[in-house]
Length: 77
Picture (cartoon, rainbow, N blue to C red):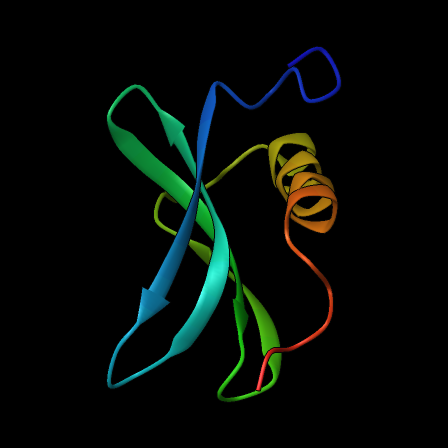
C-alpha cells in the first residue's frame, strides 16, 4: 500500500443492524482497530470514529482518501 504508507492494515466492512446500515473501512495497527470511516445509508451521513486518542493526522487523512477510493460515494436505498 505505497499510496497509503501510514495504513498498516484495513478491512472493508458492512454493518446492518438496529443502529446503522452501511459500509466503511476499518483501519488497524496489529489487532487494534484505530479508526473507522463509515457511510451510513440510513442516516445519509459519512462519519469518522476514532478508537484511539491522538492519532497521526496523516493517518486519518490517508484513511479518508482510502475510504473515498474503496467505498461508493452514493447512498444506497
